[in-house]
Image (cartoon, rainbow, N blue to C red):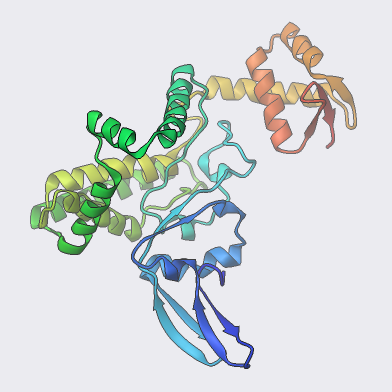
Length: 330
């Protein structure tokens, strides 16, 4: 946590001095944190104050002070088993406490969906980045102009101007729309949880999410160099919030329109039970033969493969020889 927040260091003369961490050094900018799920829980708790109040309090070795860390946090984390499992809801895939999740304005679940057209677009983009990096400065600037893209230097100046010169505020009409929609979202989440007793939302909708909507609305107004937040800005902020945080908090394989429905979920569960009955403890089998045997008993190949994947992720089955051999370990 000292590397993120602040630390007290003793020099060669025996005197203590304060050294700011990454969040302090990023004051006024953006701090990017990768492998957020690999952080120790005590380290994640240490940045609660920084993300909530944009300050870091230090009381070490007789040094008591408050440091500013007015920075935006962009963090990336992996699911529990390294890959998002469609058979589980979002709460079982994300191993992060709600106290830290509620401090993010937008939460996006990025899944690796196997789609040929999407893969081609991603590959084309990655190749384009490498091709443009190898071109000369003049050629790259001319290509950017021809495609009507804003040059990076000009975009940086525009963002700096918006941040320094523009400070929009909510109008009465926009504030009424925002508060009404916030109450509506809270009621809808409450009704959803009432239908499933004992369950809880992965990302609770609290007053922090209302503050996030205000920040998003003000940021959209800044982009237009407007002195007042309009209703259109609030509606766009609500749209961003619904497709990010709200969608992430309500993702459920049995209710969403994703690739895994109720019928497929039940079939995969039956396939997992078949694999457990067929494979005794410490028994090694051929994966291809196992799939063919399951198909003869009425199970689909896709359900068996999903069942094997789920058991491997949970540690019940071990894959050997590049997945050609399966071994029951528990």
